[in-house]
Image (cartoon, rainbow, N blue to C red):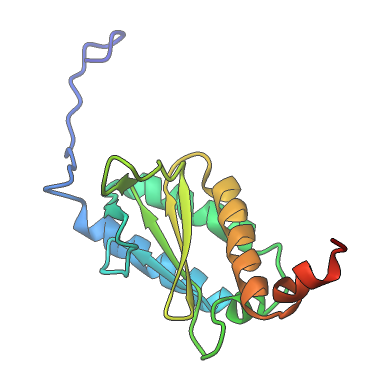
Length: 168
């Protein structure tokens, strides 16, 4: 009820078991459009390779995805053209994969909370998983920096030579 005019308003209530499939399909199209623009893959509730230490809990709210995709687009627009294509792989032509999920659930009690984001590499390919929410943009930058560190470590011998450059 609306207190002023006593009108009862009803609408469809979407849940994880009964999501707005039409709205989610629109989000998939938007994700694909953004992904093509930046030469990455953006995955929403689709099968993705997750690290064994975490379970990806799917998001079902269309509005949460739309806000997250807008924030991701804003963040990625700040980087040079082809930047994400280069960082996405260490040896073969693969795209950086970004998964947007509701929650990054640790698989065991001894695994730390992901704190909104997670970066990982599987078979020379970079992955970033982000929880949708108000901090998507900040978490994207944080996880991207971690992925870039890993990329640099894998592509330079200087880190292996570092101990030899320090005096005893």
